[in-house]
Length: 262
Image 1 (cartoon, rainbow, N blue to C red):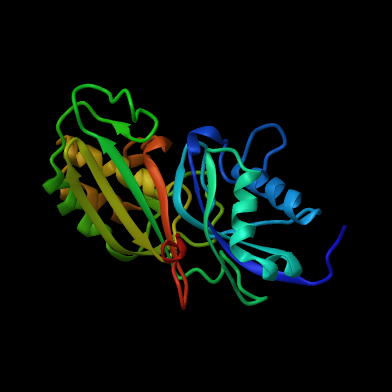
Image 2: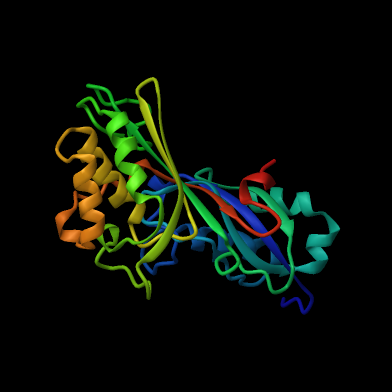
């Protein structure tokens, strides 16, 4: 059955990246996009295509990723909260819809997004966590987070981030604006939070890989600044593993994804 009257909605999703091959639909591997689109089809009776604020690689998690879809206006207006619970009833426990709202017909999750946020978690202890081994990057050697923070200051602002850009990046320009970087330690967990207008492919993981080298004393903060200025990815550190990365927010003109949770 095809509904002629459609309502565009924004959905906030949370997922365990360990269970998926990434966001984007793939023919022979489980993806977050396909899983959510199948749930929407079960509710609406026909295929619904999702657009997202940001794509994620295999193993990357999300706490508040925003997507949009055009759904049956009749079903939506009848009971929006029931729509949310109905979607979750058709989803595996590794992905949840945790917020949603009605948006304008021309709203776009990707192109209208003004700012995106990621958090990277490092488990800085001599022994690996038995409980959270797929939630952090395990780093058994002590990290100097003061040196890491000093180095991170060089990445703030609008720059050519070619030195943090993966070879498979398809962005037309390597210029991005990093607006904030915070580095905090709570117990054995180090969190690196990054906000920017947009990110290049694997930019956050490459940033973290280089900051960890600074924290280990393999690279000085000044050397990190030189790396950024060189625009040469081959001079940088290895990419940090996917399992420590979380998509945490998407900001728009009149709301942010994290505000819709509940």
